[in-house]
Image 1 (cartoon, rainbow over the protein chains, first blue to last red):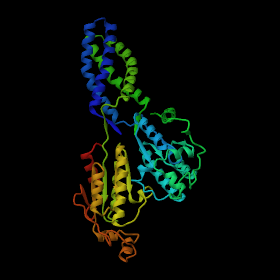
Image 2: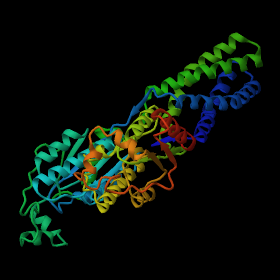
Image 3: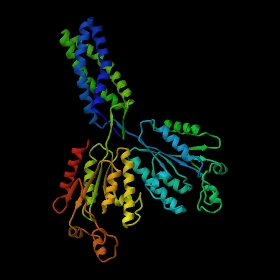
Image 4: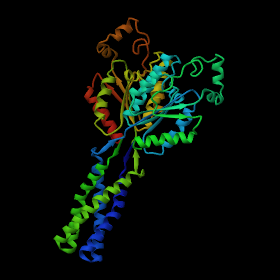
Length: 241
Length: 241
């Protein structure tokens, strides 16, 4: 969050003076036909009014009226492990940072420092999602938008998030399970298929497809750039960024 | 966080016009000695410049230069259970809300929804503090100040918080253990003394007194109101609120 500095108010006063004094000189010249006097009046006005403008700005900073609260949103990326959620979410986050909005990136790996991953059972996952919902609420109370990417395989936990946060935008990152497997450089799918990893979504745990996603990205057909563009367009159409 | 609305810019244009046009009329009158023409010039100027001022404001909103980031602080209340941390912190939070700064209240009971209390051993407590430090960091990245109250009995965890966050202000809420016991309406001290509660700070767990607290409140000698006033004074002297 930012506050206007004193020097900014002075600079605004000067830049406004260029616009305003030129106008005054033209008006006075039209009325009196004396360019020399018009310019002299303009000169005096210039000095006097830069100071007045500065004072005017400072008084207005004390007045809250007419300041609109920035409305935060939550982009919620869901999808199978290795479907491309994080990659697309990172790209969207990068693009959104160019705008002047308060923004946080939440990813399963990032929130582990903050909220311990308590397990992979259905109940544990739901409880974890609930905690993330609380975190987003805290951020949203302070107008901070979020770009969140979590496997979030269960409908009930995604529903809980939707009920907890405002302006929730579910982005379903759809990828064929075979595609995900080919992207699996760490061999996680393989280990899960061998039974070495339990509760691995897509192999021995279910992924319930979203039925009400605001945006669906078919990663088999769409590039990361195109997906990011599509999502940014949605944000621009629905929010002031 | 807030954004200036269009109507605010128009209102500023109008209020500025009162100041500016009166000045113009006086200057033109002094130069030309014709009040009628001076007023007429002022009239035309008024209409034209309200519109120009509005445009000038909107252009400046796009310019980031000269906007100072609001510097967040963290008030960290530490002290024995029932020393009065929460009461004083609540009061300070209430008072700080009157200022135009982004602010969050963090208390052991509030963060439980977000970060599960993982236990009361020394190691568990330190890990918990570390998570709270991460939360404060996330909030501070977004200029949000915090009013935090936690028993935080160990020097090492308070030191960790100090190293993690910016503008950390330790408020040591000092109370005689006998005073704390008289405040104990839920009988927690009693249960701890009976050995029913383990790791209860002040009874069967140590409280390491802060050595570098910015503010020390002796609750045996100072009322909640006076303590709150003292803390607010410290904030006002050190930060822009």
